[in-house]
Image 1 (cartoon, helix red, strand yellow):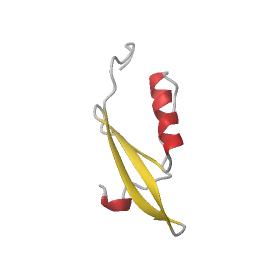
Image 2: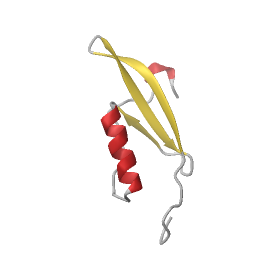
Image 3: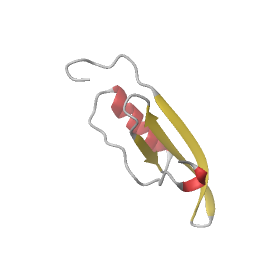
Image 4: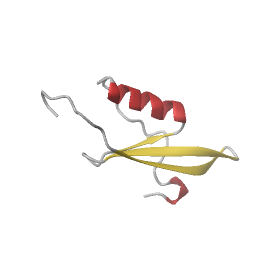
Length: 74
């Protein structure tokens, strides 16, 4: 929102297990309910860093290191 701080954020969070180097790992994605933009995360630390940046208005773009097609999601 230009010139106006957002008063709330709404995300749909998806979690699934996927194979990586012969072992199961958790993958996750967040979809912004306002914009429809989906971001994939390969680990929890990346997801938390992204959320922290959103709450502090830091410019943090989502990364594409966790493909959204793994685990039967979208």
